[in-house]
Image (tube, rainbow, N blue to C red):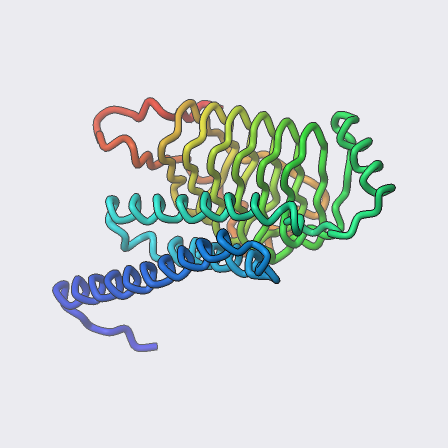
Length: 290
């Protein structure tokens, strides 16, 4: 491929055109999702897969935003993340409306017998009962006091962890992306994630994460043992502590190879805090001391 010879002015114009094109597309997709979410909230009986479609649309939108992060001005990036957070919150509210009619779960059979329900209740009542999930292509949500090991079928998938409390989660595989929201007092150990990890509203948690990119929003008092290709980005966070990734399990080297991430070269941890603009003083919202 022959490299193009462009002046600095031409490159600036190309970047501006790409940014304008992306923002136009983003606003169009955001508006379409807002209308669809509002319509589904007013008529939850019309679900018939619409909710799953909206979840997928939001996931794709997040991934596309991540792909153009390098050309987004700081203020624009913050506005976009605010919009994504608002869409996610609106979607969660719709899920609550639909749940009594059609339980929205990740990788679990929707038609449980009474016997199954009793067994599930007994399992939750027993703290830290080991569980190996064999149907993990979507994720886990609304669990408490459980120890969960997820294997195999997460490879190449967009995986999600939502609304977990005092759980220990071990993801042994190579997800494409990882979305983590509303965790309290949890420990999450993950194999290499090919693209991005998004964390939001997590508190008093411990994470072992290896990925291309990591973004953390509205979280506090978390210890993060990480390795990322790009510098981690935090926003509206307090009391975060960073250290180097040190999680392992049988077969992790094969997962690293599949991810395409360089796991042999240790990289210095540098964190970008969107709420701290000073270049002379370190941010008080995080430390690198683990």
